Amino acid sequence: MRTDLFDFELPEERIALYPADPRDSARMLVVDPQAGRFSDCGVLDLPDLLQPGDALVFNDTRVIPAALDGVRMRDGVEAKVAFNLIKRVDGARWRAFARPAKRLETGDRVRFGRANTACLMGTLDATVTARLEAGEVELAFDLTGDALNRAIEAVGDMPLPPYIALKRPPGEADRASYQTMFAAKDGAVAAPTAGLHFTERLIEKIDARGISRHVVTLHVGAGTFLPVKAEDTSDHTMHAEWGSIDAATAAALNDVRARGKRVVAVGTTPLRTLESAAAEDGMLREWSGETSIFITPGYRFKVISALMTNFHLPRSTLFMLVSALSGLDMMQAAYAHAIKEQYRFYSYGDASLLFPAAQTR
Image 1: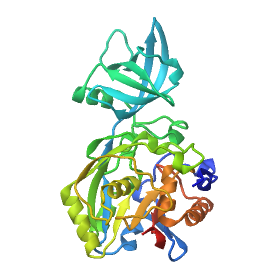
Image 2 (image 1 turned 90 degrees about the vertical axis):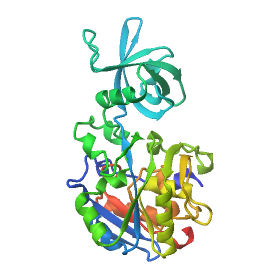
Image 3 (image 1 turned 90 degrees about the horizontal axis):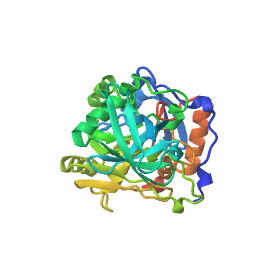
Image 4 (image 1 turned 45 degrees about the vertical axis):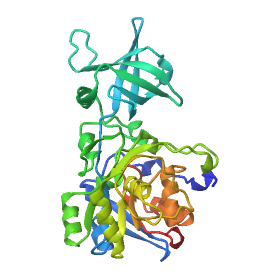
């Protein structure tokens, strides 16, 4: 399909720079293609919009502080370079986006943290071992394994997406607000943002309604923010992310579906994990590995019956995914409605609850 079909104009003031407070006070647009209508609701209405016996599936990945400010050192000359870690290669090496990458050459040394030559406490050093395409580099850190993990926690900031980070620096509050309450397994370099809306108060309402809760893991990569630059979706190469679902969760969700109840993904990352793990008949099994599943209109969903998600970027793979579920025309109309009604967009923005168009099942 042509990429420009997934374009839309978003006023800059609709981009949320901070989350709702409290988290569950965000608005939520309910999109029902089969009824042909939208409903303006709130995140706290979610339990009442589902039925007892339905299942919610969350992502339990934990965002690491992958935004690193560094000083390149070469022949006595220093230059500031910012990095966003995007994928771990091995115990000591990471791939990263560098800004500006033109300041780097293979073999350069980079120091992160408090670059105080009199005291090296609180610093982390690395060597640029490769320059890759599109501003990517490979960094080999002087530490490895858990020691490297602890150093990154100490010197890094939360990797806010570009549409926020270019307008304000990350703050200490983002260490909590850019992390879901389900975060348990280190590995994401971007938040599974639909999960940011959940609080203990909302969980209590979900449990009281008789809706079951389950978790899968997908370590969100920075490629989730990248627009599709190809003119046709068939020419786009999807970024790969590592995910898993255990045997007990797979069996529980198979039982939910066997009883005629709905599996609702809280975010596009659980959705892609479930659809990657499912057999053609929709049966889930224990699974782990990398997935580069690219869902566009015409895809037949095997597992999920609804999706709670935030509002996505134009021409992004995620807007293509929601259009595959609820229909492109419906989603263009829904986003136009959301803009008109002043919903807040993107990672710290409001939510939507999307039901499928009949032909997507």
